[in-house]
Length: 134
Image 1 (cartoon, helix red, strand yellow):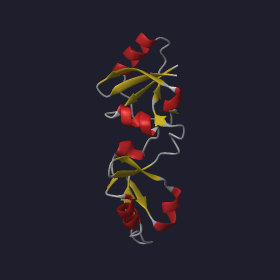
Image 2 (image 1 turned 60 degrees about the vertical axis):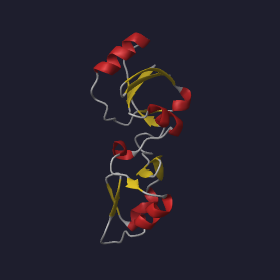
Image 3 (image 1 turned 120 degrees about the horizontal axis):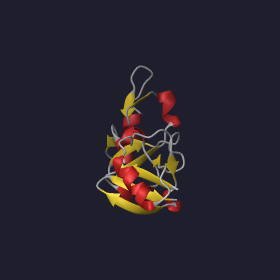
Image 4 (image 1 turned 30 degrees about the vertical axis):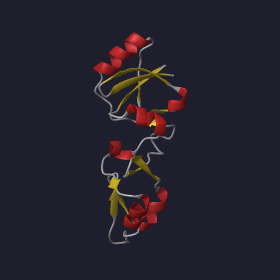
């Protein structure tokens, strides 16, 4: 089976083996202590925003926050990508067909498909398109 992932930092993704909400956009820049202080400013009448979510005090415990890159914190997607990294499944049955399919596709926004990077082999990378064999 082959899957594809769009990423500018695939080696970091593989090491991390989890995906963020909102493609890593809208994160928080700072230390974990600064993130915690920022989250603590949320009130019943004023939300804070991380990964595009409006977060109120009663919702904070529903999120897991982690460092996507040094000093950049995001909400971890444990709903759509609970098995590791977000991806798209490919129909191809051979490596060559998988590469052709992955480089021709444009629908890399994700729909709840994910894979465990520890159980996959990166077989192709070109630009920000990567193909794994599972």
